[in-house]
Image (cartoon, rainbow, N blue to C red; front, side, top):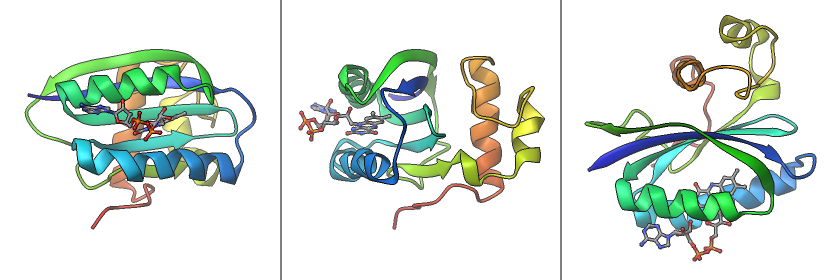
Length: 142
Ligand code: FAD
């Protein structure tokens, strides 16, 4: 039983390269063992993350993430059963939204910024798919 979960959150304090590296380190340490794949998209203050994998693994990982004090206002944007992964190439791919072409962001939002709180989960998922299609996601595994 594969599922895909999408959520958004706000960083508890302004993100630094060090704090993002710490989170990605957690992903590298835990996700392969649990069969979790996905993408973490971030700006100075906002996270947008998609997780894919078995239903139990995705739910356990999301439960941990929700309790993490490094972010707040965690909002579930979508949860669906899936027949195949879309983000299977990444233990946890990363996108620093500050480095993404502003026209790509403008395609899905009123302003060229990451704001999943202002759009539907469907729109945020389309943005993530576009980021894959334009090779904006780094950290492809193996
Ligand atoms: P542990 O207690 O050893 O937990 C390890 C991980 O395995 C936890 O996610 C836990 O829920 C999970 N787990 C435990 N048992 C099972 C099981 N039976 N099946 C499946 N999973 C199980 N951490 C991640 O591991 N993956 C992420 O993708 C991730 N993304 C994050 C994104 C953001 C924005 C933030 C702020 C944090 C993220 N974290 C992620 C970190 C997470 O919040 C925890 O801090 C981290 O998982 C704790 O890891 P640990 O090895 O110290 O703890």
